[in-house]
Length: 129
Ligand SMILES: [Zn+2]
Ligand SMILES: [Zn+2]
Image (tube, rainbow, N blue to C red):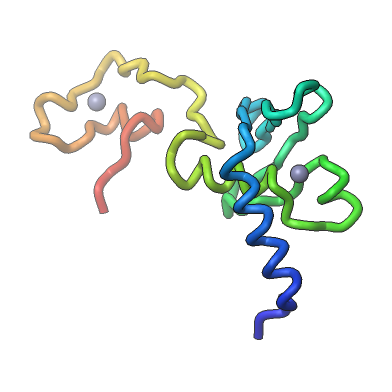
């Protein structure tokens, strides 16, 4: 059984709608910690909160804004992060050695599209299932 009351569902929707027109910028602090700045406020520094994401389940965990802290609400920051991670504009878990430092012993070119083991090992590529 879902435990959400109609008014809670409505609050979710409101958060999502607002996230669409408010301008948020994101900054990945460390893995799974997203700094969310509301650029539509004049004093955007004062409207900066951190949304955390579980690094295992990749579920949204919490936000530091009063809305979430005091009411445990699904706030617009979480909605914004969720939207951005869903559509790929935000990577909550960027791989450490980003942009593909190719391993020295990379052999991908010889494998007809399959990743080579060195690349798989460093997390640069994934083995197809
Ligand atoms: Zn929030
Ligand atoms: Zn390779």
